[in-house]
Amino acid sequence: MAAQSSTSAEAALGVLTRNWGWLLIMGILFVILGLIGLGRVFVLTVAGTLFFGILMIIGGLAQFLEAFKLGGWKGTVFHVVMAILYVAGGIFVIVDPTAAKLMLTWVLGVVFLSVGIIRVIMALQMRPMGSWLMPFLGGIISMVLGGIILAQWPFSGLYFIGLFIAIELIVNGWSYIFIALAARKANKRLAA
Image (cartoon, rainbow, N blue to C red; front, side, top):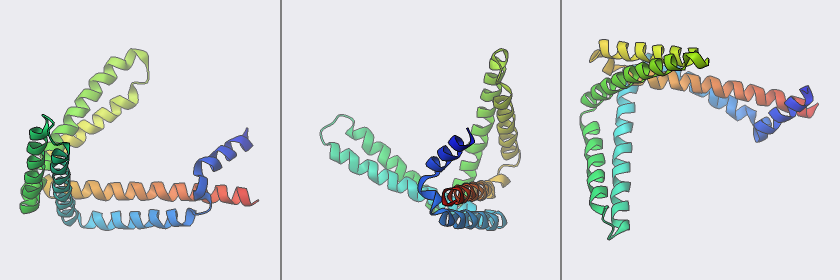
């Protein structure tokens, strides 16, 4: 049974068993960038907001091209209107990133709070079937996070997005590190 599980782990890791070093380096780099980001959450929030604005403009331009590519389709007007809204929203974000990050943070706070409430209600409905505790705890965590964001708003708008990005970089980096170490271990088993 142990031989079968090691073989399936090696199969799942595939090429990573030979190239685990690059993944390890990338994981370490992500952790370092995330730690730097924790010290510069305001700058990271502005950068993240500007990046979001650029993506909105690119999405709007793609929508606009798609509208004219479709030609005589009745939905062309709707595609053009959506494209204009995307581009206008992206320009707003780039021109006034402070207002945009405050608005985005408020929306995220409302979303986290709402999703948390829904998760708690769903978990309580699932209680008779079992397996309700993790969704319940997830809902509580989402509610607390949303409550903290909204209770500290507008101040939370200055740092929350950057904090979120920094934490994501760190978590992603540690994930890569652990995958790389598992691939290294599988590579050693293959070599033996």
